Image 1: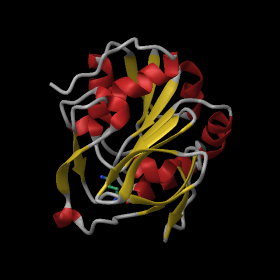
Image 2: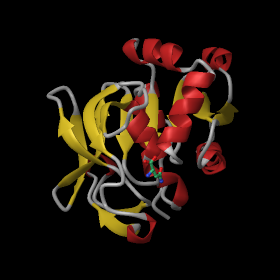
Image 3: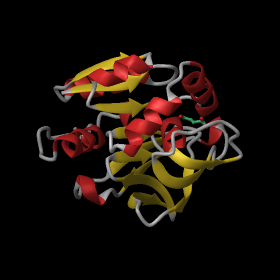
Image 4: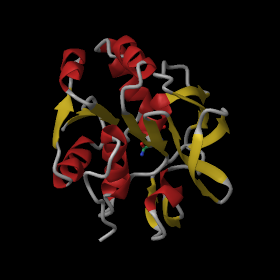
Amino acid sequence: MKIGVLALQGAVAEHIQMLSELGVSAFPIRLPTQLNSIEGLVIPGGESTTISKLLRDYQFIQPLQELASQGFPLMGTCAGMILLAKKATEFPWQTIGAIDIEVKRNAFGRQIDSFEADLTIPVLGDTSYHGIFIRAPIIEKVSEEVNILCRFNGSVVAVQQGTAIACAFHPELTDDSRIHAYFLNMITGETIVQGSSR
Ligand code: GLN
């Protein structure tokens, strides 16, 4: 299976490494024409304003919106989640809108307020998931079509709508590959890889 990682800015290499460890062919996507050769796309964390401007400059927005409307598998982490959201408050840049949520950027405070926490994510099984939150957004509104995958202290921090998933934290910065495995298994419709919490 070929999976792309949007490589305009942000934590690209870490996602590629984790996907490669799960046995898929993962590579950076720098131009919209490369979208034709992949079966799913990860949008990494980074700076959502920068990534959004680059999405516009490299003319990614329309092809990604079209793919999203066709059910193309997308996964967004942190800034990537902001870009997948239908709406981001106080964010004058364009988003892809693949998931019908409204997000709030930097909802836990500034860089210094970044934190780690053990999360309960039922679709990943009973073992808790160590979430790394770096100037993370939260999901303030969720439409009926959206499945909530995880809440932390009452706030929604991971969701899925159809074949698009998003989380406010950074699974690529942990040793826990279960979220990436969940994404890959969702694409194939069967369990092809077993993520591990190591
Ligand atoms: N605060 C960043 C933003 O709004 C996201 C941070 C991250 O991706 N780690 O874009």
